[in-house]
Length: 325
Image (cartoon, rainbow, N blue to C red; front, side):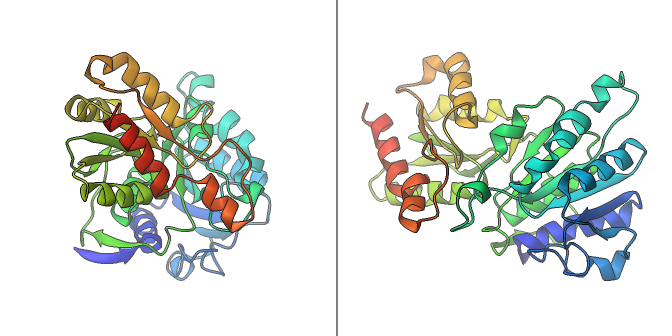
């Protein structure tokens, strides 16, 4: 094993796949000459050249369309968005072209493509630059949606995404790029659609994903001091969701709290709660609780940011409410 940053894990995944398959290439804003806005693609231009590491204009709809067209014609592009907030401009290509092409062509034309970049809030970036898009894209049939929370998961899942025959939305975070973690020295792949038990426990299941899962870990550590054992399930893949892993955990703990960075309405946490109602109802000793961002546009003020996001006190309160119901 070796210790790497999250950004380095992503770089290794892309570089290994580009060495193995000449159809794979990377394009996006500042990915080449500047080594990536967050240095994810550092050194890749020197190794692969300007035909496979391509700087684009500030035109998300345009370069996403070019990438989708190339995927339909046999290449395997990786599209980097500087932030998923900017990818709203490319949503037509992601949702109306990439996601639907296989079905609309009667199975004749696939679109093996990865759209990746920073997702969610990253400090004082205010309402239009702080949104979490997991539920937004998970709503769309034809897309796969991945949001890894560790360097290990990031590399293994990105390699799986690049090899996948379907379009994949890969959601990272500016706040995770510097995170460090262990990954194997050799090649490995993590299957899409498989959740991971990040912490074993017996009293309550916490389901989460992405960087907000860090708050769940902090809450679990605090509650352990009070004798409450939390099991933490990292979904990793948002579409398809590994519902079976969640149900099996709840059968053991009989309680569930879902922690999500985004808004509550039509959310991933809503879907988890609905699924448990249908497939684990007899095992629940309390209603499923959700801890989400407040149902408001994101603020610029640090105090309002803290109030809006799921945090340790809110998670602990939710867990205690299901423990002592």
